[in-house]
Length: 103
Ligand SMILES: [Zn+2]
Ligand SMILES: [Zn+2]
Image (cartoon, rainbow, N blue to C red; front, side, top):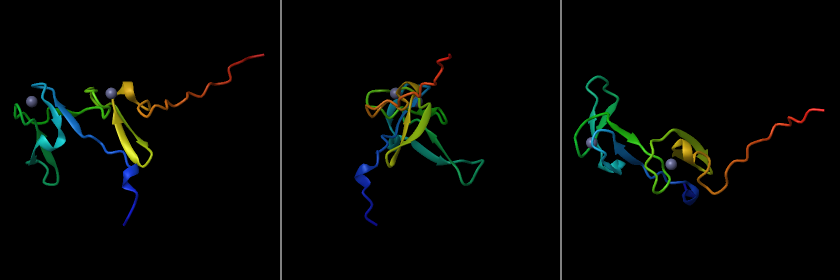
């Protein structure tokens, strides 16, 4: 398999904690098996050790807003806050103007 992976948008996978305002990489999160669901995991903040209090943040550099939406872009997948939705590649999606001209 030699897919051109360089075209894939690499998701930064950054998170923040609602309890202690920790911000960091997803690899720093603490994961544990969910005692209520064998197939699931729960993740916790590495700073305050609370669980289920971290949230994914916008993948735009310098933006730490909570992810509001996700959308495919190129061969990758983006997850951004509402402010940066479809507006991160420098090519904002043009809103189709409805022909509202009436005679
Ligand atoms: Zn925390
Ligand atoms: Zn953003």
